Image 1: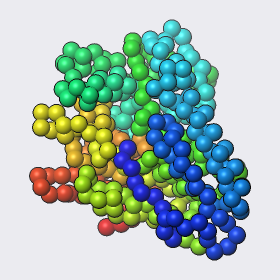
Image 2 (image 1 turned 45 degrees about the vertical axis):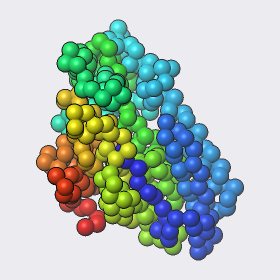
Image 3 (image 1 turned 180 degrees about the horizontal axis):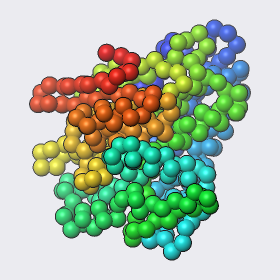
Image 4 (image 1 turned 90 degrees about the horizontal axis):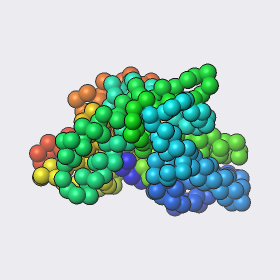
Length: 331
């Protein structure tokens, strides 16, 4: 995902608000990227305690959802492919797989959590500077397909029906974790908070005295940090998917780290899509899918998801183009 600059409606760096609440923030590296959690609490001690609990929740979810850690629950499930018998999974992994399947269906396969074999192959291409060999690409594509995840709703167990499958939650896991963090903060009495997982941003109610949380949306590479405009959000989420931070040029063409599950090749750029959604799980996955689909097919897919809107930005020659779907809040 592409990082966005998030700050309070009153301006970044403000420590207190009118009224009894105090803003407390902390940044730590989780899931391979910096996370910043900001809360409005009754006092600093309460805010720090809530944030510490929130980071513990992220650590717990990483042990479930990481595709880098071979001991994670998700990695252990991938290692069963083809599964000899259904594997009972945790509530969190089940929820991610169910929502992933819904978004796969709603995006005509542009989002696919089984894309792992293609992701691994594309990472090799990004390091080498060469497109994948056709035989390796064909073998990886044979291991990909959302229909190969077989769920047993009664027992909450999962089977993987194809050999060498590898689940990749990279387009949904951090969004899901951000949503769970907001839920945990609410249980700690925090009603106004922002979770910024390096561009996957989820916000609760607005800070006291403010209309919302200001989030500056980055544009294309070289366009500046606020080229995409500034959003004012509460009780919502926003994610940008694009090639601003992770890209490779092969044979004179720029490609994103985001892999098209239908081809196994990175999305051609420069291009970016920012999605606003009611929750960060949806925003994360839908931004990935919309980036794959592009401005031609993407807007119609965004319209299938209630409460969601998007801004597409891409380069045509020397010109930068943009397209907003219905409901996008800024020009």
